[in-house]
Amino acid sequence: MKVSVWDTYVKREDGKLMHFDILVPDHLNDEQIILNYGTTYLNSKAFKTESISSKICRFCHVEHATDTIINDVENKGFSIIEMENCD
Image 1: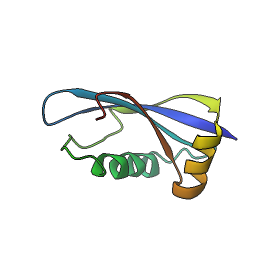
Image 2: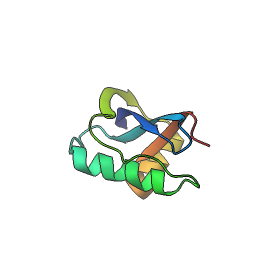
Image 3: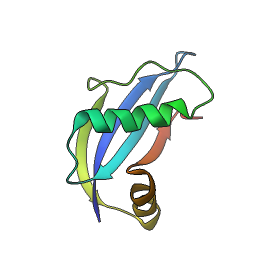
Image 4: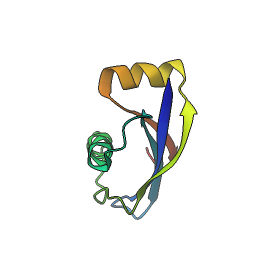
């Protein structure tokens, strides 16, 4: 399975900048759906963040998905790769 990677940066309430990728099926290009996935992820965090927007969430590239990512996409519609300040 190929997935599109959306590079995302969101400011946390403590001022730190979160960096994470939202991975979705490569045929999905509806920005609102992708932003909603990002919001779902942010709502799962114990801290508050700024709202996600297309200014801070951009398509980056397409790559082959790992088994873990495929499982996430099949079950939730998306997968997240946490990069910086996500805990």
